[in-house]
Length: 179
Ligand code: ADP
Image (tube, rainbow, N blue to C red; front, side, top):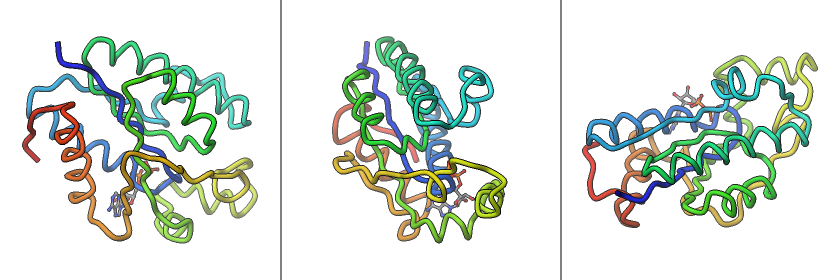
């Protein structure tokens, strides 16, 4: 059985984690690879609906996802996990816990994320309607040793997705893939 891997997309809300992971998912599926997506919003609606956004709750959220990712990886699945994961210690936890872990920093300046405001959350956070919002009223610690950095103001989403696939091929997680 092929070795599973967790591709962990970290970055600010609106940076492009979900967009890129969906494109990567579609390419992997076309190539008949076993793939699963764990996305922050969906996971918080189901697996971790009891949790909020304090540091302790964010930690618990990530711990549960890491646990699921580890089970999937053990069964040869490529897991695409998109979570802001703002704290270095949380990402280090994932790296240790999951083992087969590729960290991808989806990089986008805060000003651009605010301009995009995909879900209208930045406006609410800036108006004080949402507390503990990463980048506005909560910290984001930049990754210091990600396997890959995708700059979503420099590269198109297609190029970003291609860079992820290329990384997975070069490191033998997959043998090839149609874009
Ligand atoms: P996140 O999952 O990080 O919160 P989303 O993927 O939901 O972010 O939203 C990112 C937004 O930025 C989308 O509207 C997407 O179309 C846009 N975008 C612009 N350029 C890029 C790019 N190069 N890569 C990914 N998304 C991009």
